[in-house]
Length: 249
Image (cartoon, helix red, strand yellow):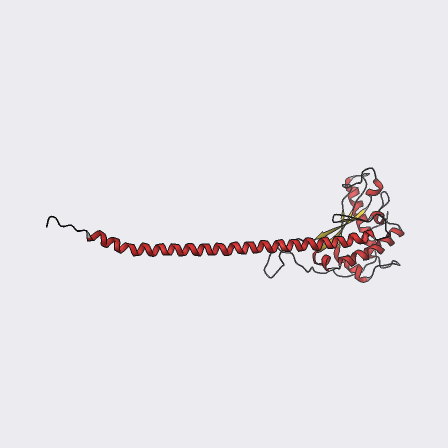
């Protein structure tokens, strides 16, 4: 009686607990496997998204490059002097040079502008340009003479003058209605004062340049989607007003 031991109590406890811990270990293993699967799926999704963005960026860059090459080609095979594509800015040269303190273009320059711009619009209608071209910006400049605000207004008037010349339906060589409509939809004006004056050439600083702006690589707009860029813009009402609001000086 004194030498007897009660060992089965601990053994029964171990036997009762072992199945529980084995089951819990299996559960943790299963959860770990599910976590790894979820991480693999997430990583694959992110990688696929980055690959899609890279492909889209490459397609955009290729299309913009082809669009600019087309515009560069017409500047190299044109009778109009001074045309040059610099990056995404088209220097109009003698076509859009203005007299000192003036916003008027002589008849020859106005006619040459109306002769050149339709060729550029034809390039803008190609698929490479049409898919990514956002707008044209007419940027006016002035020489360093005069105050900043005065020249800023003069620069803006010069940009507007170019636009008036292109939209003049009364001119003998007026642009077609389709081309005038395209200009109304895609051309914007801006004035830059003498911030980009050409050193020691004030007569070359009194000019207008044409800058091309392209769409960014963004997701298409869908119902309820924000932070995207719509493909279709609301068209402006067409009035075909031939009167230019800028007084000549």
